[in-house]
Amino acid sequence: MLLPLSLVALVIAGGVAALLGFVVFRSTAPGVPKASPAQVKARALSAIEDSDNLILHSVQTSTEYGYSSTTGETTRTVRQDRWQDMTTNRTLITQYDSNNQPQMEWSISVSGGTSTSSLLNYAGHSWVTFSNAVPAQAFAGNGSEHLAQSLEDQLASGMLTLVGSQTIDGHAALHVRWTLPMPPLPPNASGFTMPRPAEVDMWLDPTTYLPIRQESLTSKGEVLSQTDDVWLPRTPENLAKLKFVVPPGFTRQSASSGSSTGGSFSFGQTQITHP
Image (tube, rainbow, N blue to C red; front, side):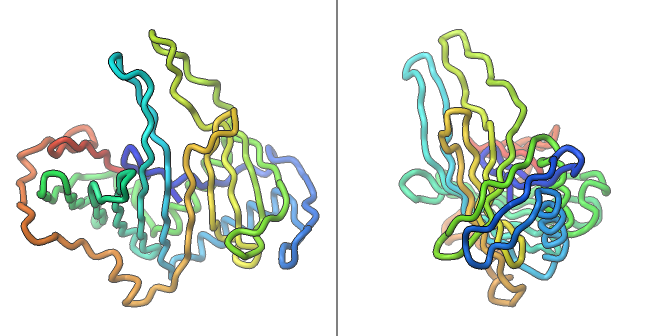
């Protein structure tokens, strides 16, 4: 959950109980307990903080919007496959285009105040490794602590409500929603308005309280992104999913062939921003 490349968004969150009110949730599906928003928040944060012995596998499908003076409004669907070690915060992200072909792969690890990234550019058949100094406090702790803090910060920006229970992939889930108090973006000179998330829906496992799905929606109810999360044991087999593998025939480029200033790195036609 979210972090990012321009396309990476792990949108999960938490909040301030005093702002959430008290709405009693009445279960309508087996295995989904009654709870208040404050109780759900506390249990979800606790579950994420205790997830440091797990591997998080997220698959996000999102719609990208754009506009040009020649073609007008454009959209494309992209998919990201993300593996994250909640103990070390090491992450591997693979991005696919609308034809399910890999575009790029990004490996991120942090140690001693230094973020080291390796990037594969499939279009250019090339790859590069580069490092940036990062504030030590920004990466203190493990992945579960960062995820819990993200949850806390994001939910603090909106009003949490309990929608009810729902079956997700054959399993009972607790459905929560928070509304984001962000006004629509103004249109550009041609009248195009970039869609903006107005609410986020999240489904929690009613036993573990870990998120299993998130959706980001516009004020019109259009889904901008959907993320499905699977929480796996930290086994050697699952840790191997985070290995950065360079395909045969790819050429390594030096970091000096791009730029690494201001927290971003330009590599061929790809620009990536450090988390």
